[in-house]
Amino acid sequence: SLDGEVFSSQAQFRDLEPGVYTLTVQDVGGCTGIATATLSSAVGPSASITAVPGTRISQGTTVALQLDIQLGEGTLDTIIWQPAPDSCQSCPEIAVQPLRTQLYQAVVIDSRGCRAEASVNIIVEQSRQLYIPNAFSPNDDGTNDRFYMFAGPEFRRGREWYIVDRWGNLLFEQKDFMLNDADAGWDGYFRGELVPPGAYTYVAILELATGEDYTVSGILHLMR
Image 1 (cartoon, rainbow, N blue to C red):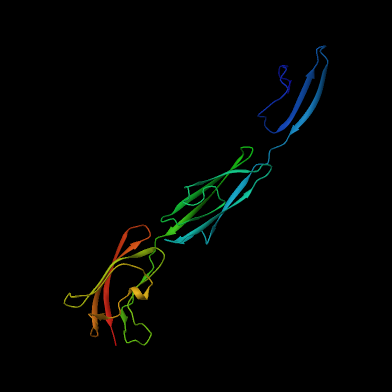
Image 2 (cartoon, one colour):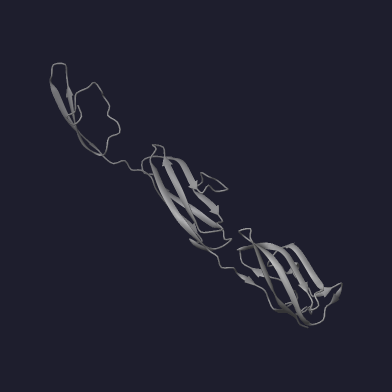
């Protein structure tokens, strides 16, 4: 009998809460013996997540999520990430590149079925880092000889880029080009000749890390 309950031939008692229990044993002659047992709390796993470089990032930044696990009395059995990563689902460290603010959760299950949960909220700032010079001087002095775009990680690539003169004549066209690449820019030449100094108009369509298009236009001054 456990804690004064009805006697039975049951020799094991399962699914007990932590605490102090009184066990009474009775033989066929009605004689009894009493013992006290203390059941302590099981030490289950615990977990936390560290985000590197941090929990607030610019769009397009890759973040390493590091899961710190303290197992207690069991051994590691399962790790479940939500949302599921493209890489290793059961790894204690994963790399993610959220396009928008995203909550990441991890569930750790040990060999005894005990579980722990951890979460981290990655805030994605929507600011767009894009610098386009308004002048360049293609005079082969090694400084500012080409006109190209400087973009942050929230931009994936350039889709289309056109430069025209004041009469609308197309002087430069580029498609599917890399950003932050001088070789993808304009050297100031048209049909093998350097165009005259002056103001020229550019229009570009860039692709964001989200897959959306971003259109930008402006005036470029070519100087000697």
